[in-house]
Length: 355
Image (cartoon, rainbow, N blue to C red; front, top):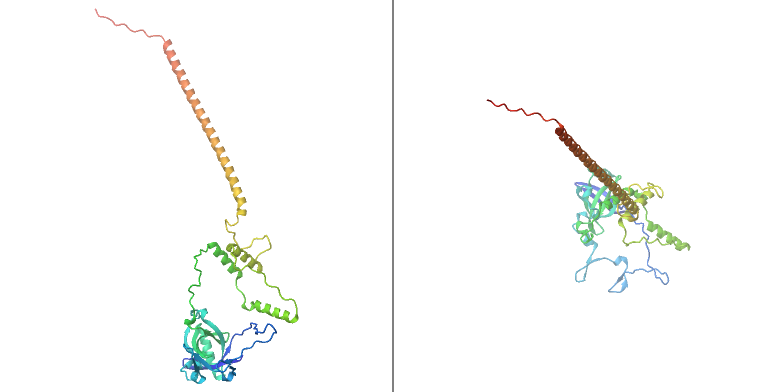
């Protein structure tokens, strides 16, 4: 890899000569501007607005535009005398946990390589110290005419540096979040969790740029005069959808893609139908419930009728028993009276009178 900057890492009193190389590359397909009438290339020419003529690169310098529109020339000699210790030095200012770095600050990525054999020992020392501490180094460095913030960490056996945006370069999220208050149900969260668990993890190396592949196919077809690819079907972006149905369908699709679900008609694990959503499915249940209620009512009425009949029978029997007892008592009284009437009377003894 070609180095884009040479300098040193300042680690306390230790200086580590290093070379800086880009850790990323851009694979995007670039286009040129052309004249649609004849296909001619459109080019930009750098013209001095005072002389109205094209200026070669050797005569082009830097200038700062003041508030009144005037331009103040800034030469390379002016930049060279700036009191900037990070012009040729990556100055480590602190060691912090990686979790303390906001991913929003992440910018370009670079590899740092030891520049020469004498730099190998201190380079390895810093690398192993970062590994053992499980921290990252915050540093300041200057690149392409401005001072930047950087984060040093270990990637495999190499020290990598991520350019960081300054904290005041990060915009706040005010006004970005939805302004309408929305309530999310537990059932919706459960389905979202099921979808997340089904999608699971992925090997980043398996992901690729589908747009670039389609663009390459289009260009090849244009060159060879072949059939141009067809446009992708409209996915209905922006339409109002049934969130629950979309979540359930997403879970099923993800499970089928991973081979976790069977063919048509088989139950998909992890998807629980939501009560009250399908009226057509609940109608037979309601009819069955109504039928059961009617049968129960008839059975209850029959029980009540039987109880009433039993009570009436018991009352009749009790009344008959009372009548029989009364008749028996009357007969016994009549018999006793007759017996007393027919019995012989005893003679009453006369009283003796004295002479």
